[in-house]
Every structure is written in C-alpha cells, then in structure tokens.
Image (cartoon, rainbow, N blue to C red; front, side, top):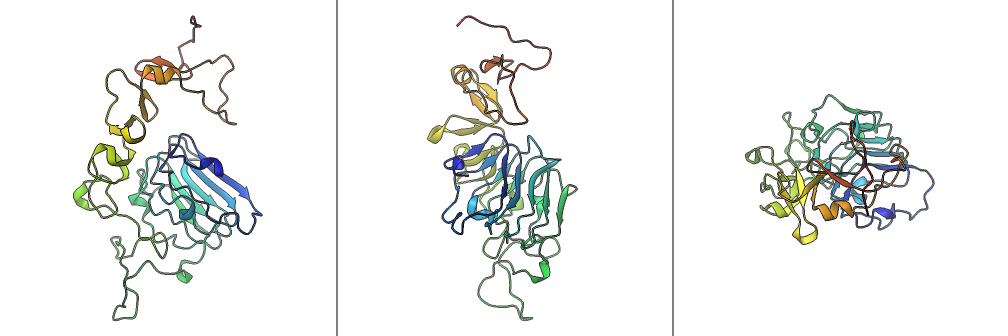
Length: 287
C-alpha cells in the first residue's frame, strides 16, 4: 500500500484484498492523507489488522464510480478486524452503490445516511451481516446528558432524529440547505459551485475535488466547468497538446490491456485519447 504515498487522485480503482496475516504493527503510522479522490471504485476484501479505514484515508472525499464493481462504487466485505468505516471526509459517490457486508466487528453501519452521499439514491445500498448495532457505541457527544440519561449527540440528525456519525469521534458532514446541494467546508461555509467533496475557501482554487474539470497543477490548480481554448479534456483534467502527447501510457491491468500497436496519447475532437474509439483507426505519423 505504500505506493499510495503522496497520491492525491487515483485514476482508476483502489483494491485492497486478502491481507490476512499482517504483522502486529503493520499499520502503525500508515496513513494517506493526500488522497482525496478515486475515479473508479474501491474494494476492501479480507483486509485484516485494520480497525478504522478513516485512519488510512482521512481525507478521501469523492468516489466517482466511472468504473464499478458489480454496480458498486464501494465494497467492504469480510474484514474481520474492522470496527468502523471512519471515512469522515467522504461526502460524494457520483455513480454506483455501496455494499458493506459480513464484517463481524463493524459498528456505526446504521449511523451514516448514505442517501446524502450516493448520487444514485439508496436503491443500491446493501448493508448486512455486520456487528449488532444495538451493542455498538454512540455518536460523539458534548459533556452532559439528557434528562432521560441518554447522551445528547452533537452530530447532525436525519429526518427521524437519528444522529449521523462515522464513529464515536467523527460526525457525518452535512452541508447547510443554503448551499443548494453544493459542497461546504468543515464549518459549513458553502464552497464554490465548481467544487465537489469540500473546500478550504470560497474560490475555485480552494476545492478539494473539482466537480467538472481540473486545470493546472499544484498551487496553480483551479476548477473549471469546461476546458478553455487550447486545452483538451483528459478524463477529469484539462491538458495542453504538449502535455497530452507527453502523457505516459496507462498502467496495464487485468481488465485493461492496451493493444501492442498503440503508441501514445493523441488529440481527437477536443479530447486527449490513448485508444481510438470505434469507427476510427490509428494512422502512423512521421516522428
């Protein structure tokens, strides 16, 4: 997993599977706070030794679901040591559902309002066969108690009054209705309309993730609704022609094996593409 160090965006999917006998300190001080976005899906299967996914990915805010795993954007299955998801920064799943199943120690499965996160609604949300929610802890609470002896949660609530949280330390972030569906900061200030998942301020350059396209890099990065003149769309980015042609080929995977005759990225209809679409044929050009 150390290959994820410093990674801000995963263009593709993230799969962490079958790590069954980790050393006792395998995950001590292991965290990837830079990761904000996964464009495909996330699968966590038989990952042992991890108790809280939020410790690994504290700032993951958006899963786009451009590729899905059996119609799901997030799958967490058969992780026997997992006690809470803890994905406190996650506010948006653009496409696909959620499946959280057969995690015997997993709590706080009923205190997340997935309908506020999953763009497709709650029709494809499967949460089953985890730890008995009646035996789990409570959402974060200020000092003091209600008159009936129950702890008074400081977290937002759903329509039934149920507190919403990821674990006993982190509430689910719910943006004010005044934001009109836009993202917001941790203190509830509405983000720029070009933002997705959250922001650090009101400007397009303050977005954690871009709703449409990202232009530039590092401190010069900003979010735009469409790629400006002399730039070309490459997935979620705007790139120059020079940047497009210099782009390294995508890493091959079991499901993505580019034909051996494909040479480089090229420009087609204002987009930067690696493989020619149907009804097109790549023609060799002079060096």
